[in-house]
Amino acid sequence: MLNLHKIKHYLPIIPELPRLYLESKNIRKTLPEMKNAPDLKGEIINGKKEFLDVLFIGESTISGVGVKTNSEGFSGALSKILAEKLNKNVRWKVFAKSGFNVKKIATEIILEIPNQNADFIFIGIGGNDAFELTHPENFEKYVKELIKKLKQKFPKTPLVFINFPAVEDFPALTPKLKKLMIKWVKSLQKRMIEIASKESLVYFDPEIITFSIWKEKLNLDLKLEELFSDGIHPSKISYQLWAEIVAQFIFEKEKIFKSKIISVE
Image (cartoon, rainbow, N blue to C red; front, top):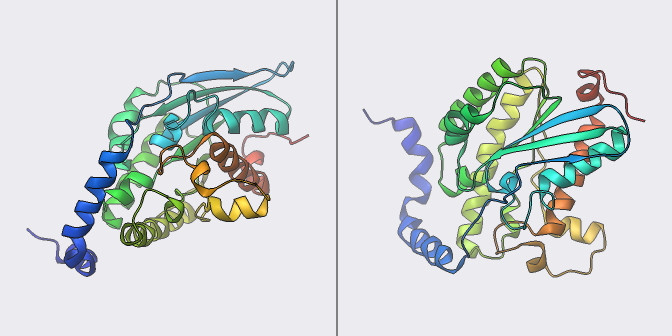
């Protein structure tokens, strides 16, 4: 039985779909093969006795696509910041795959995560669901499923959903595709904001990442293309910038640390 409510969400873009499909297909041909970074765990040692255990879950931006190792990517960069800011050692592990949408993350990746200690869990989603034009209701359904399963495994661990990708900056996208992606990301972002507002120990930074603005703020002498490894995925410097943005968000949310009885020194 057709869901007319869901179909209405797609009606405005139906006339453009054939052209957008061809544009998307041509872009995919020009992109290099997307590979997950090989290192799935690491440690940041600063001489202290205490360790923080941090898990990173999600799609290609969490799996380190665009850099040689996850140590150079988002997971490694944020772990270093946490170690410095909290004055503790950090053990980090990555559970992510390029091309996975939130449904696959909730139904497949979650099964790969063993029962273990986790002080923080960072989750990166939104990019693939935007490219696949996932209906916001379906997106919400699987985000809730993901949260439910994570809470069953880690009932006292803060779940931090990081910002959605900087689609409006993607050099590889045509203007038409970029416009559609921005619209779709915002529709998914709205659902994510609503979910996070109702769930305990679930946090989401609603600011959509815009590397071009951060480039200007930090006065970086870089071309926009240099902030991306392949026109879609971040470069090493962009992953570092993104980690700083997320760190700023969580350190502003003092209750995230209070929930784990962690003091910032």
